[in-house]
Amino acid sequence: MDDNILRVGFAKNAPEANWNCPNFPTLTPRMNSCPYPGLCTELIAYFARMANMTIVATVIDSVPDEVEWGTRREHGSWSGAFGYIYNDTLDTVCLMAQRNEMRAMDFDFTSVIYQSPIALVSRELTETMPPNLWSPYEVWMATLGGWIAFTLTLTLLEAWESGSSVYELIAINRTFERFQTIEEAARMVASGQLTLIDLKPSILITLLGEYSTTGTGLLRAALDSNPPRVEYEIVDTFELLQTGEYLVGEIVDSRFMMTARSQCNLFIMDHGLPELFAQLLWNRKSSEKLRRINKAIGMSGDFIERTRKKYLTLDELPFTVTRKNCTEQKRLLASQQTLVIAE
Image (cartoon, rainbow, N blue to C red; front, side, top):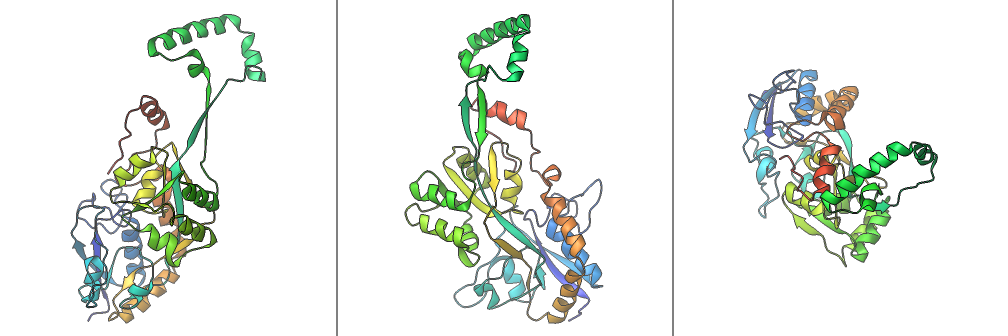
């Protein structure tokens, strides 16, 4: 086996790899055609260059964002993308994963590439408050009697046309977070005010499994009386979140969280939640390659941090995620129209 050749599998899974780029996988950014090749794609390509290795890419075909990562079968082999590593077809696959007891039975792992926090997402509450007519601003405005009279006339006309009351049009809407700590979230789940959505499902393994904390322990106990709802589609999950009756837990660099950051009426809370170690699973027959890649990882801290920020910064959402447009979203929500979530 040539230790200068790195056999890597690339799956259509965001944010690890961008299947919209020409000649997928594109390993390095192209300003016009592929500025975002994928978080894992950019990292593994950089590590390979640092280690003087050449990547031989294999595309793991699947429906975008529905790749089967892999599970251990009863007889000991592995399905899905991890199966390519197990049967020695590949050295690794470009999917950021976490070490657990089952995976450690059959695979090696790279050094920790970065730590990925978990966050909870739920819908903000909106409270309608009466206008404060005696604040300094309103007193000043009151001196402009003619302008106020004109504005009131327009308000009455708008109320008449929309069927709303004048109070509804001039009242102030205050939005606030449902909870500020995981302990508060756990109490709301225990009381039935909120239900946890287990997306695809993964949260019971990550948030409530080997990476549990005191706060997540309370949340797990709350699920005894209020079991989670399992969902497999991101679009369906966001529709449920819009009802204000659910919360979701996911790692911050997941496709779900990238989309959540583009929604104006959702809030994201990560206080007191664990951070997961992001690593690559590795073929145990490729130990020399692993040694060289781990050395490259150890020398690439600045590049890793810059690349993560590139994919996690709100104003630089890659792929097909809709950019944040709060004015338009508030208009749609006010008219009870459905928000369109990019897939």
